[in-house]
Length: 403
Image 1 (cartoon, rainbow, N blue to C red):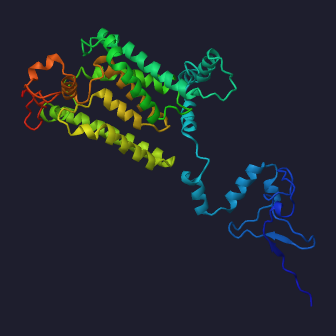
Image 2: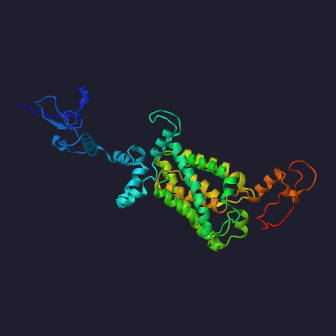
Image 3: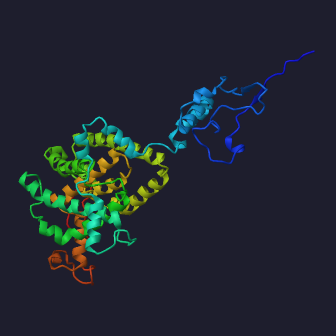
C-alpha cells in the first residue's frame, strides 16, 4: 500500500541562524528571501497563513535590502501593525519640522526660495573671523561660545539696529510717538535692560537652535519688519487707541474694541493649539507647560492685581514671543512678529514700566528726589515722610484723586 507523503511546512529561517558571515544583500542567503528546505527530495511550501498567499523567490529579485524589508512587512503585517507603523508617535522616522517646511518650498521658484532661505551672513564665516582675530586654532576645543554666541550677537544687532531705524522712521511717517524720547535716552536708560531682555528671550525662545537663522529673509526679516510697523499703523484707528489695563478696559474701551479682542483671541487659541500639538509630537508638552506657568508666575501674576498694571505692547509681545518656541515655520514667524512689535514699542514710546506711575513714584520717593516735595508729609525717615500713592480706581473710574 503506497502512501502519499504530505509536503512539510517550513517557516522562514534567518540567515544568521545558519551562518555567522556578513549578509550580502545581493546573495540569496539572507532572511528576506523565501524560505528553503533542507531536504532536496521533499516538497516545500511556505507557511504564510496570515496573508494566505505564497511568495516566490522571484518576487524579491532585483530589490535592495531595504526594499525587500518593506515588501516583506507589507505582505505580512496585520492591520494593527500597519496602524502603529503609520502613527508618528511610534515611528522614529517622522519628518522633522525643517523637512516639512522644505516641502512647501518646492512650489516656489528656485531663485526666490534661495533668496528667502539664505543667511545674509553665514554663522560659520563670522565665527571663523572671530577666532582668527583672537588667534584661536579653528580645530581647537576652546570654549568661546561658538555658533550659539554668534546667533546671540546677531539677535542683539538686529534688535538694536531695528530700534535705530524704526525711531526716525516713525517720526518721518508722523505716527503717534513720544516726542520727548530720543535715541540718547534709549542708550542712557534702556540699553542695558534691553540686552538682558533679549538674552532671556534668546534662551527661552530656543533661538540657539541650529536651524534658527534670524538673518534669513523668511520668516525672520519679513515678520520682524511687519511687527515694526503694524502696531503704529493700527494706532491710526481711533478705537484701537487704548491701553490694556483694568482702568482703561472698564472705563474707556468702546464695544468695537471688545469685538476686535475676541477675534484676536480666536487666532490665539489656534496658535496655542498648534503649539500644544507640536510639543506633544516632540514629547516636550509637560516641560513646556511647566515652563510657561513658571514664567507667568514670575512676570505676570505679581503685577496683575495692581491697579496701575499696564500691559505695554513691548512687554506683551516679548512675553508671548518666548512661548512660540516650536520649530515649525509658523511658530518662528509669530516669534519674529513679536520681536518686531517689541522693537516698535521701544522705538516709539521707550521701555515704559508695566506699573507705570506707581513704579515712577516708588523710585522717586526711594531716592528722595527733590521734585517729590509736593508729596512731603513731614517727619519720618526714608520714604515714610511721603504721602501714599493713590492708584487709579477702575471700579469707580476715578483717576484724578490726589492724596
